[in-house]
Length: 257
Image 1 (cartoon, rainbow, N blue to C red):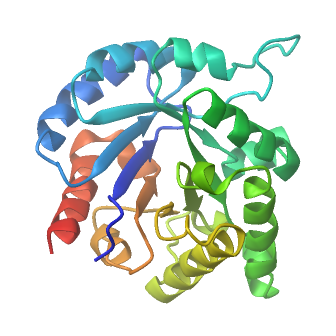
Image 2: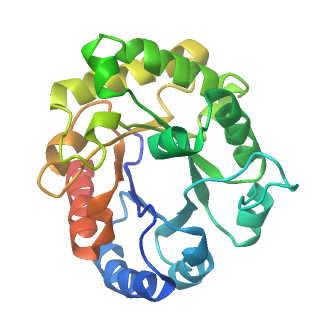
């Protein structure tokens, strides 16, 4: 068993009003209050950040934003900066989710800057990487991951690399119901860890690498038991406190085994 603490993060995407978020957290907190061996986070829309920070104070649940701009301020209508998130006591931020890359044109170059800015602001970044179905079928998975990871870590010191989490999410498995086989997930996550080792050998045993892509209570135990998988970035299954709680339970069980 790895010495890295398992990390289960729920990405709500564009779901939940503040009232719905409050109802969710009221159901989740009793489910995870004793999950001492696992780090838990919810990644919520901007509108619910303050409410969730306030409602989770003193609990083991951390609150992450789903994106941010790399500039501290400026004429960027609709964007939110790292200082704005820090002021709310947000714990971290998801960067480079495939939907942000696909629909909003986020580039590896911009994400490398965002990762650095997040760390400088005291935010914990989750950097998302992953290949499309076409890229996997062409045998380009490793090429795609190499570019994304190397670019994302390029400007970081070894110490900073230990503070980030990388989430491997095969794009073809996000929201589709498809899940990478255990072999596919392990191979990709192990390759990501090898890339970290190439950049900073001392960081590779410490930096956490998650799996994401249609993670559910039914498949979580198998995926979380893989030797290089340190947790999960959960999508649809994180919208229900009972479902999300079962995934946390699976991580607790594996951590204790």
